[in-house]
Length: 137
Ligand code: CMX
Ligand code: CO
Image 1 (spheres, rainbow, N blue to C red):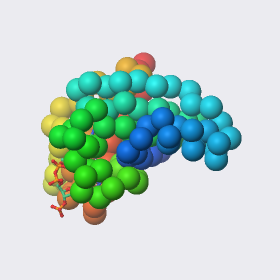
Image 2 (cartoon, helix red, strand yellow; image 1 turned 180 degrees about the horizontal axis):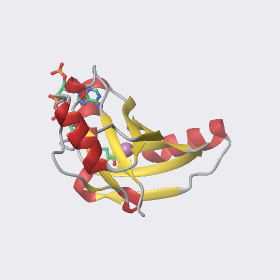
Image 3 (cartoon, rainbow, N blue to C red; image 1 turned 90 degrees about the vertical axis):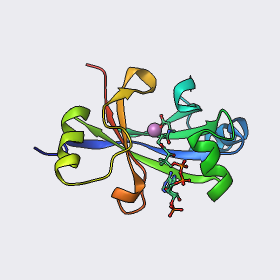
């Protein structure tokens, strides 16, 4: 059993003002966003900028008690999570469970762009919130 790591899928960045951040990233990266989605059950609106085989994911909170809203209140804007693209999220979770790593999601759920995702607790990964992402087949 391995993690089945393929790539860094995206880096999630928490922002206070999504429209201002989109404007900043558009001007500084010099590329246009490729995707925007409101993910109600995650409490976020995300905007994706392409970066090679990976993406930058800007995250605006849908409310103060959502995960990103709480993060912004506690730490302010900045890097929120690193997402690893894996072959199979279920198998990756099984691997981490066998390694004794603390999980947030015990079973995979649906992410944006019809991906399958699961979060690993920052306490289990040296302080980095990790998201596992499996692309739709
Ligand atoms: N990165 C690193 N550490 C983090 C963190 C983050 N993004 N968010 C919280 N923490 C730390 C806190 O600092 C805290 O540490 P201490 O106990 O040392 O103070 C600890 O984790 C618990 O944090 P908390 O504020 O007490 O608890 P929360 O209610 O904020 O829960 C977490 C934290 C990670 C369980 C929750 O944010 C979560 O379930 N996240 C996964 C879902 C998510 O973030 N979705 C949005 C992204 C959507 C997407 O990419 O599609
Ligand atoms: Co993400």
